[in-house]
Image (cartoon, rainbow, N blue to C red; front, side):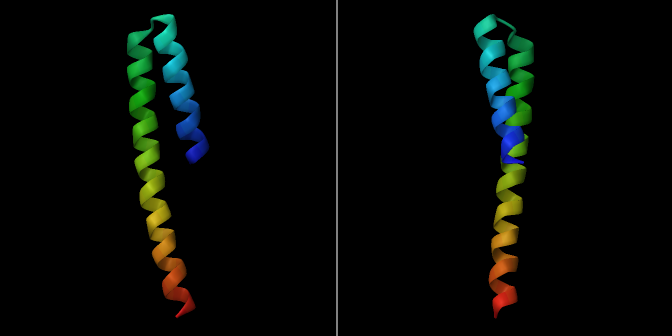
Length: 54
């Protein structure tokens, strides 16, 4: 999941440099969604990991 976020960030940066504003904005939005989804899944896995050991 984090790899997808990094991939879309790189696409957004390259598209922004080349002047493709719409593509850069879309890729940045997708990167934000992937990143927040990654954070939510990471926190859930942390809580599940600590509760299984108890």
